[in-house]
Amino acid sequence: MGKITKLLTKAGDLLSKILLVIVILLVLTTVFSLASGVKLYTVQTGSMAPTYPIGTILIVEPVKFEDLNSGDTITFNISGGSVVTHRIVSVDPEKKTIQTKGDNNNVTDSAPVSYDNVIGRVKTHIPYLGYAVLILQTRFGIIMLVIFIVAILSFSFLKWLYGKEDDTEEEQQTEQPTEIRHEGKEW
Image (cartoon, rainbow, N blue to C red; front, side, top):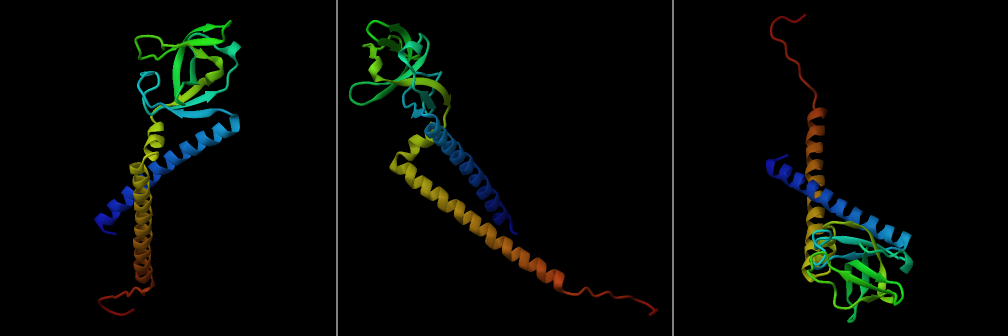
């Protein structure tokens, strides 16, 4: 096998492994989400940095109002259909409202959040995996995914093709009888 073929094979193997790890992580988080009733969100702004940097996947579980405390991080709907994740500063049990603030913001949010708008509390997070989700939501990301898959399939095909030629050469070499020559007198 030539140097270029070996290099392409190693590159294809590495790309395949990276893609496999990303796909497994995305599938596992999706299955976990469906099985447990939690929801997944991807952080798209820096308001909760450094706790939840942009590209972090948040795993959000439903929560009762009575279980909310200052310091908890909640995900909630705001007007216009947007979803926000901020930390609880205070809870007003009489009005069933929550005052929130982004960790990276200097002031609290302008209006308290009604419990009716709360989606849930952040249970855990996976930093940076959300970048894959964010990228795949764009036309560029889909094109890159298709190119990536075609490249991996091409590398796999080349590996199979050249591996098959090497096997054929080895078989031909082993099938030829070995001739033993002796110099000198015959026994």
